[in-house]
Image (cartoon, rainbow, N blue to C red; front, side, top):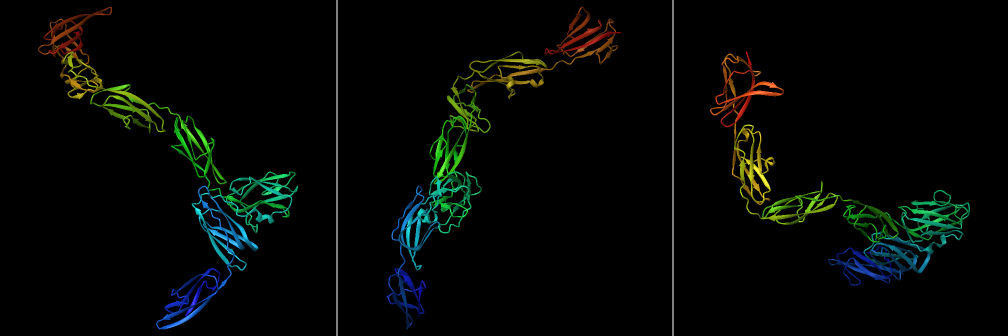
Amino acid sequence: MSIAATPSSQTITSGGSVTLTASGATSYTWSNGSTQNPLLVSNVTSATAFSVTGATGVCSATASAAVSVTTAAPVASSVTVGTLSPTNCLVSTTLLVSGNRFTVSGPGNYAVNRSFRTVVTNYALIVNSMTTPGTYTVTAYNALGQTTLSYFQVGGMGCSSPILQAKISPDERTARKASTGLSLTMVPSSLTYGTGQLVTVRVTGGQSGTAYAVDLYDSPSSYTGNLTNFLSYSTSQGTGNTIQWGANAVEEFYVIFRPGSEGIDRIVEVSDPTFTDFIDSSPFAIQDCTPVSVSITATPSLTVTAGSSVTLTASGATSYTWSNGVQSTSVVLTNLTSSTALSVTGVTGVCSSTARAAVVVIPCNLTAVITPNPGLTICTNAGGVLTATGAGDGGRYVWSTNATTAAITVSSSGPYSVTAINSVGCSSTATVTVTAVNPAPLAQPVLSASNSAVCEGGSVSVTATVTGSVDTYQWYKDGLSLGSAQSRSVLTLNGVSSAQVGSYVLVIGSSGCGSATSVAFTVTVNPLPVVTITFPPSALVNPAGPVVTVPVGAGQSYQVFGGGSNGRYERKIILDRLNGFEIRTTTENGDGIFPLDKAGPYTIRVTDGNGCSRTVTGEIRGQ
């Protein structure tokens, strides 16, 4: 039987706890009556001996252990806590502690470590820059290295951009500051600076001709952590981080803390080469301003049309000031007529960032048009079409009927408007009036024609007589439209051929309200006569002439054919030409027989029984 203690040392501080574990049997009974194994003994304030009896079957054995108690290390006697919120990014607390070393640890890798050469009693330990809610642990060490734990809570939701503050009280560095003639002032004076922030280090009391070094340090005890992320330049002569003291009573050194130098417990130190003349600033913190990056979004867009409004909204910081003086997250620009630009500066703690937005205003040059214009007359219960133009490529249309197509069909009286919107948002509106009417039925048009039977190559003219209000005419041949060429009240056919043979009608309309069709009109096309001439056998005919050489005045004749049984034949012979005039002789008959009594050019016209005629010419020469 044995007993083991946890922790392994059986000497604990007053008020502590110890776990005793027995082994070597199957059941156990402790001297305090407990049958638990292991046995937890809490709040032990004095030395105590414990025994346990273990049993296995009918066998038993007993073991004992002594727990020693020592005086506890000092504990913080008072605690102050705070609550984090979006407007309260930091919590600070003061602890009254006794001992010679103290640590504070908490969420977000928070750590504070303070040591003293001798034991301090009721020391006011300042714990600040706590940015994360949760439980924080305070550990106090006494001269023997014994520890005591205590806890406190930081409540709330935390802050996305906490502002760091130096944890070290200025008087903790008093011994570090030299009692020489040097003095140092940082402008602006602050417990926290931001990366990228310009700070002026103003120094007085230097010795002419001496080169003073300007350094940024960390660590309150060793001062060996020289930070290289430190951008600086001097108004005096000097190179790097040095001040070459001249005749001035005051020298100024400008510093910009680079990213990477952020943290707490920072000091700026000015020192001579032998380090016998130096001065330290009060401790300060450097805040990382890299996360503070302001941006601007535009609603609806950074490109708008004239007369539009734009809302610019900043993000990335906690407070904002616009270049037009407005101090808010958003600024509204209304009724814009020209392009403009605004900048905004956002601030979170000591950090700031600036963004700029340029709003481009596009002038509008757009005219909406509705066809037909100025309006449309339609028949009641019949439809008409209105067509909008003007929006251009990529544009769109919105009608007063809520239709969004370029063309709409309307069937009732009233005004109709459309808004044309081009690809960049410019708009224009047009309006027309539609009138719906219900006229009396149209009467059938009456046709009158110049003739219905025409010779090939002739002309036909058909005129329609209508009554009432007629606004459309369309001629049809054998049921097929003749198109826009024949869309008037008169049908005209010139140079007719067999292709024009057919049945013709006229369809009239009145504002789409109704129509009427005429009685059919039939066109007949008669062919021209085919003319042949028979000359006596003694005649010599030149086909290329046509020239006929034949005895003249010998009582002979020739005959013309092609007129048919009811045809007529007419011959003209030119006898002479005198002073620009022709002397002709004309002979007409019904059988086409003409004597060879005159020589010279001739013209013969043959007319058939339909009144169609053909004319031929030639020349007769005497042998």
